[in-house]
Image (cartoon, rainbow, N blue to C red):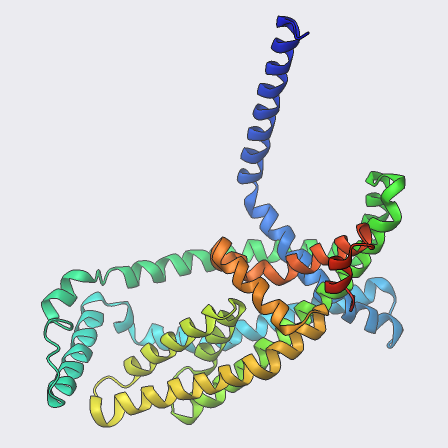
Length: 363
């Protein structure tokens, strides 16, 4: 029989649980930057582990020196990216027109007028679609300078974050055995072997996955650079890098990259004739980008991803599609690593399940 005292205690426990859960969520929200640093550091650690093992086993480095060498490689890569962006920063410093709202508006209207002339020449009424007055009222050109200011603010905050990430990554690599021993103390003895086996397999598969992702982005970056160089687009390396990074977003990222490349191509050729130069060049760039995507989607991406996480290409496609519909862009980005973790844990804890056996047979 449920007495009023038991009922009151149950209500108090439920309220207490809700309060503790709310406090925990609030605390996690307050330290979200730290959690992001930890996540990025974990990814860098997974990428760095095979390099660390190479230095230790093949080059006979001691553990500390091998860790420092991995961090040095990361720092050199970061410096390389910074040096790549310096020419763009210098050129924009010399040409402040891109920060001048009036100049941006003037250039955009000029482009719209050229498109109108082209369409009218082909007997297409475009005044309603590309009406200059509607265009000016619909777009707030101050968004561009404001966006650039926010980017500058983000870059200024990036220094501390980058230092924190590298510092955490150093100790993740250097003291990973200590962290593993500490984790053993928290794991129940009955599940210790399964959990440790899961951690080892997850570490191996995700290390291969993130290295495969870097290889894929590098291949796409090279191909984008070739396409943009052929058509004489300025700031080739920067644009190619930005478009390659967008490939982190499966399927949707390449579309955004193509649109970005088309817009930058048209802007870079402002002042030229729209029909004979701007439009053909933009179409050629788009065709080049689509060819890159054909190569990436049918060769590099399926081979690299399916091999790195031991999953069928169709399996990867369906997981990304489901995650995209359920959780948007973020879901598409984390779909493959999260699915890999779930597969490994499922295999360890449910090895006799026929469905689990089917999807984990290559792990």
